[in-house]
Image (cartoon, rainbow, N blue to C red; front, side, top):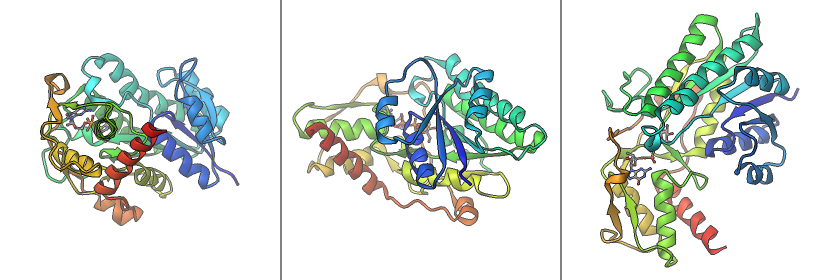
Length: 325
Ligand code: GDD
């Protein structure tokens, strides 16, 4: 029998990769879109013609109940959030509402829809490595204490704990994937990997003469979004819900990202091509993150497939091709 899935945040990078994966597995996939129109929806419809669209808003409980009823979803993936850490200080209240309270609204809608049959719907929450913030241990695992450093991180921490709480209080099949940074050619241009892949490509074609960045010493555990959505799906196929760190276990700095990206277009020394502007430096930085995904490896048999170097090359080549077209 065909299964139905509902994805919030469908117009984001992960929404696309997850919907594509679920469609390939034979699911009927509903993507939730808020607002009257959404710029990215048309191209998503072209890329995934079988995707069904439902209207709804994470801030509107009754719209979530309607979306659950309309889709009759057996699996709900909550990817919707204001996800750019850098702007979350300027929009702290709306970030807390959508990225934090939105999770509670959706959990509540799932609980109401399930009624007595609490396991009728399986729920996935997109948690984030940003909850570790000023990390208290290296590498970070499911048992590492949280210390979020941005309004975004604080909102994600609330969403994470709410997911755990609904599992423990009501017995919902609610799992939380603590995903470390994951990128792709579909990454938004405000995130550092895409900012670099686009900048390097534009420079190679003579369209730009430098890249303006912030903290070049930040270190992240960067993986490929296409690999990470498989982990989301695997979590919901388990008999019992749980929390899982999803990461590569390898860490690179922004400087190393620049080394790899510039090397793709034959530039060895980028020092005169990159400018640091305080505008891009965050009020409270997360300096270093690296994940230990051994629980996901043991229990889900999940492993990342794409290396950092392959990922950055893919992004640069994709940006070059888009610019040339
Ligand atoms: N965006 C950006 N722009 N980041 C910069 C820049 C710049 O010009 N210069 C340096 N950085 C540094 C940031 O300060 C940060 O330390 C690091 O590059 C990565 O920044 P982002 O790519 O914006 O990602 P993030 O780590 O803050 O958050 C991403 O990953 C989280 C964990 O998976 C987002 O996708 C979050 O939504 C996600 O939860």
